[in-house]
Image 1: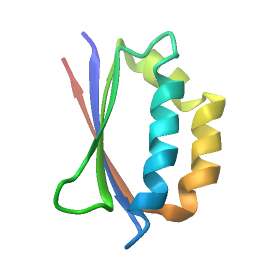
Image 2: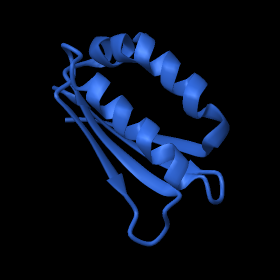
Image 3: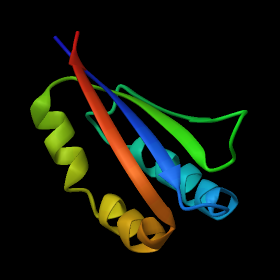
Length: 93
């Protein structure tokens, strides 16, 4: 059974265009992780400040390892001031 994670990401008003490059850089780094089964970024067609990250991990241990990766900390440091809200939904499949 794998874990599916949906992250609804909202940038601060007007910051979406600045956040997007950091998100794309993160996608490239995460896709190299051994436990990463899927990591896709989607941008809203209605608002440039809204994104969805679609993730699949083999198990909780894989997700936990992902959250400890240096590129996750680097992303938080780089993009944290641009973020307004991140809502996570996790589903077992």
